[in-house]
Image 1 (cartoon, helix red, strand yellow):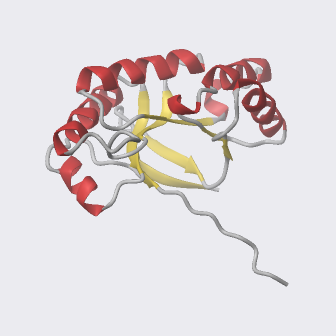
Image 2 (cartoon, rainbow, N blue to C red; image 1 turned 60 degrees about the vertical axis):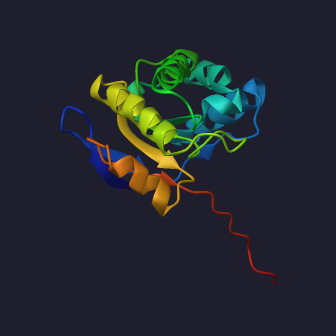
Length: 177
């Protein structure tokens, strides 16, 4: 199952799979093994981030799978709180590490640095870099992660491309018997 989250820069719909494999806290070798297994089981969505330090392992699994690029949906994230040029450098490094020409969705991982530095001007600068990346066809969709309403409002003030998603952490435990 998928959900349409918008259109790519060429006007084609972007379909986000409703489930996939997340790779947070995996090193390169664990990410490689987990993604290889997931792909062999029919998974179509892989979620990573440049900050996870595991994208090279994911690239190895993707290559070894021999699956066509169109058969999986790849999401990655860059840090928040970056200047426009630093954000662009992180975007380019991300697809290089993944060994692909484009990702299906690229997100700004957090509205500031993990240490809390940033602010409105930095959010807007990072967003401009994401828009350039999107318009160049290097991301089919762009969005944010862990943003609250005011952070999204900062982006919308200058956005020419509306964020496709706000990825938020949710953890659901099975209720006790």
